[in-house]
Picture 1 (tube, rainbow, N blue to C red):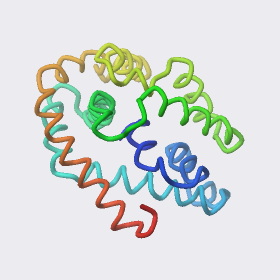
Picture 2: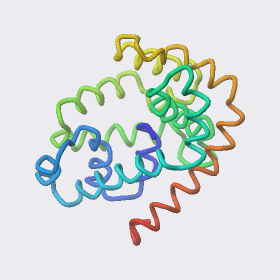
Picture 3: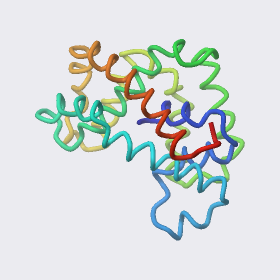
Length: 197
């Protein structure tokens, strides 16, 4: 799952837990993890559970299988981006707050806790906010731009810049799979972290 889905899944939790979820990819090793307050550690744990569950879910694997021949090891990264697009594109089914308003509340929350952001996360948050990526995920043009940026980050080895084509070709399938996957994801989090939701 990418930024929007992660933030959505922890939206009702304590702010520091949301921040832990947001920074988790930049927290490497037990020493770095232990340096954070308990509430942030919980967010990191939730983020890692989301990622692990996603990668092992049968429907996520079905989606990545469509991409393997063209994108190899980058298929799961593309799937994360596709799923953020599906969530954003069908946002009104998941949240009563308009997507732009939700994005603004998340940007403000992250800014309030900027002192917790590792350097790399701080850089990407700047890009995210300046380009309003949480809202941009809703459009195919926005996703196309994200995929091209990711391709650039891999020195164009990944080929992700062309992955908008598979999204357009299989969007119906991805939308159907995401709906069940996301329901399963939310139930899994309730089971793994009882009392939080």
